[in-house]
Length: 179
Image (cartoon, rainbow, N blue to C red; front, top):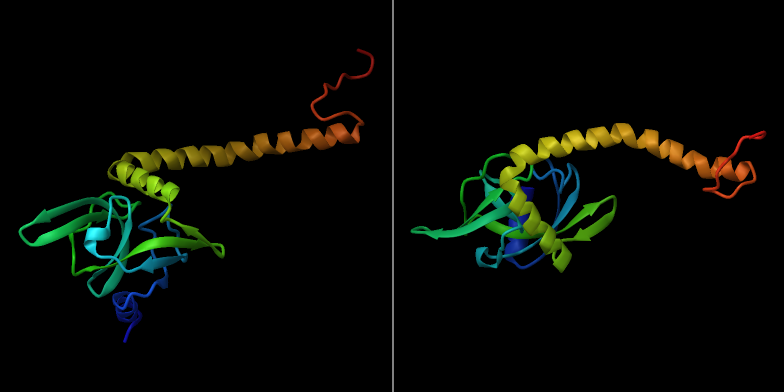
């Protein structure tokens, strides 16, 4: 039995499972190698913004629910990776195996199933269809700040220590002698 089948069976029995992630489809929310905590859920229990775990071609996929719907075949959700520009095929009830309730980063689990987490999830779902334009702009802004922050941060950190070494209170003006 492979790990996907084992996780599916445990979730069907009502157990929560921890699954290490591979891939970057949910970046920046879930990073490569982080561990997600998945609890069993039926499709009726999913809301927009949840991260649904479902099976597709004998593998597990964790993507954000963007929309719910019903058609002649039954209930479905439209899901999308946060870093992708296109939606997945409709996810049917028989494909859904769970919902991500926590993400482990650096040994600490960050819960998603509380009020603040749900609000952030809805925000991600709201901006996700516009990710084609938003993420490149955010990337450019982050690169600019990465370049500027050490310059500003380095100077700001030096001032208080230099002031103390010169016997002044931090924030006091330094007037050169003779002026």
